[in-house]
Length: 188
Image 1 (spheres, rainbow, N blue to C red):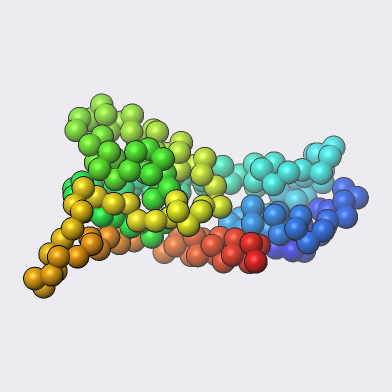
Image 2: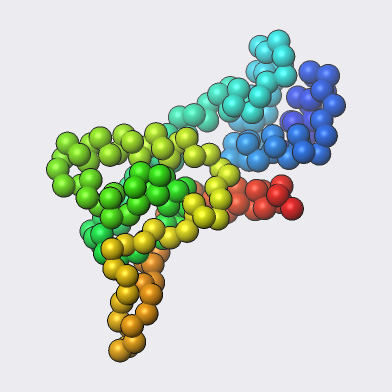
């Protein structure tokens, strides 16, 4: 990843500091190396000024992939809905937790499935919200989504609810883990 970025910086006469390189790396970490290299070549040919990461992402054709991820995340939400509003939920893709939290929380999300029309509008809101979140999510936003049940009984003991973990496909999980590692590396 660093080689194409260094070529880009040099082509535009930019002397990047460590933070700038880290910021570009985090923003572009989910782009396949061949697509990133092609986007850098296109940027050198087409851009008058040093392109921002969002411009490089567009040149790499990543916006369509971001929508595909949002649609896949919606599939994870659909798998969790039958658990109902009383269960606490924790999605492996923490962007789902953040998006649903912004849309009112887990019980509010389940309530939006009352009619086909409500579900249609909720799907559009979710996809836009998921896409807008980006890769940097605070620990507070990553927290599991609490259901309506305040306590549950486990082996005769009344305890706080244990969130049901909802996994995601392998490709998204690897990308999520990589983004989290890169974000941790930047913040330290």
